[in-house]
Length: 199
Image (cartoon, rainbow, N blue to C red; front, side, top):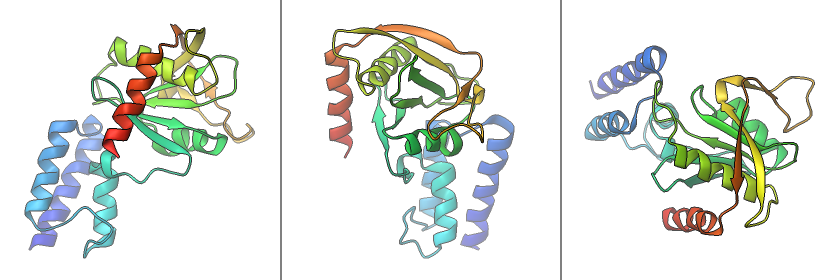
């Protein structure tokens, strides 16, 4: 009976994904609480590992096992940020981790980190401060010095594609926009402080 109830919750999440996009934080918390109330733990040690993996994929961005070379940060406002620290990790951001309304970023005309600012819901935009701060993080992780200015290309992730013939870490970007930022050391330090506190 409990298994049937959990499966019904999974189906509700799948239907929501298809109709309205990913669950927002409040919806995720409510479904996670319902699952836990049924005695299912969202860990690899669950008595139903296949079920647990599906729940973690759909519900638990915070529980998500990241590919090698991908790091997780948060903005001051609490938005999740994923960063690729290698060509293979940059590919993983685009091909495995990104969702349509996430904001993808990369320093223009320079090799370096890809940054993915998570969207909170299907129709939600991105706060200007989050975009600016994530553009600074992309610049910093691509070798732009503190106090230096650079242009950062960004687009909704749905406009970023990995072509089969492209080298690892290289993508096509449609509807690209540009942010001009100066790398603020305090913003960068705050990213690392929040990351350390969440470990």
